[in-house]
Length: 382
Image (cartoon, rainbow, N blue to C red; front, side, top):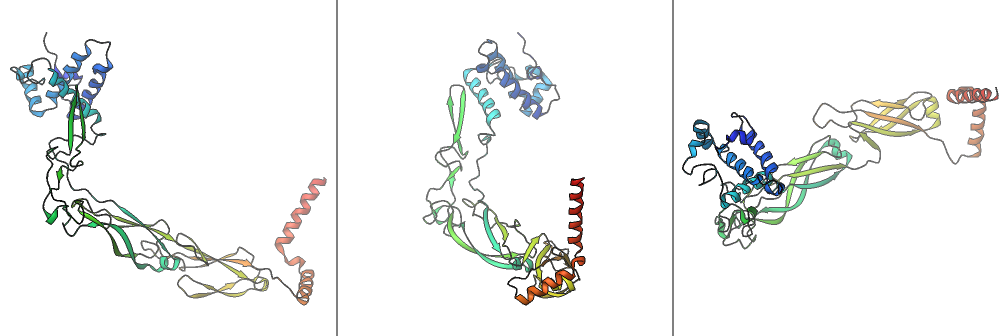
């Protein structure tokens, strides 16, 4: 029986790309795997046929020969099925299924070993440092020195992990692959090499200081520049100031997360500052001036208009927080709070009652409210 065209076996056109071939192969391999088709006696033969076709077409040289000469290019034991024409031996079938296993689960298992050894060097971990600063420090910016406990490159072995700085050698168990394979029937199971832990290399004489890791625990002092305008949640990245890499690998980064503490006088919303200022009844009624503090440590005189009510806001332009990346400063909003006097003397109470009797028509909000109340009652009666 003549062999079927390999492209036909995979269900793709002759001009299919490598990715299209791989996708078609995975689909067919899943569909025709014998374990899923115990009731189909042809499944195993079809599964072998699919693997034979893909074994040829995935190889650029074999594919070119096949496109030119067809199956004749592999007469005499050069076919995709190994040393046999038209089929697989037991070893070939196991190898073919190993390809399926790696294609389907390779990413999950950490990818193919290929012919490349896993790098022995590993990047260090990133570190996080939480820093609390005052609102004044956030306003002006500040330079702070922090102590960061972290792993640093071992000075004794210069990060190699070997005594005297000697270079590690290729792991004899996995030959530098970082992985070992075990054949179980027609399954090929791949595991991390137990000798080198997946590094591909071992240290014959580990450094006595770091124990072969190439890094040691140590507290470092770092000077950090906090720019003006930072707010809670601002993140500052210091490249290369994190954990040292393993066996000479690059260091991770240090991320500083800013938290600005609450202030006794000011509340912040972005670049805008709010300040609640109490004023007396007489100042609210007659008008006047009050002195208010500003975040830069100064004082500003603010004119209070006659008849000011609680909640009235006045703006001081440019007296807020600076923008983090330039662009000037925000404003400061002063919110008035009319303060009711307490612990009055008899004379003060007498004067207030006299004042109330003379000023019933001078309270616009009160007059408006009671007028609305009267209208509400009248509508209920009607």
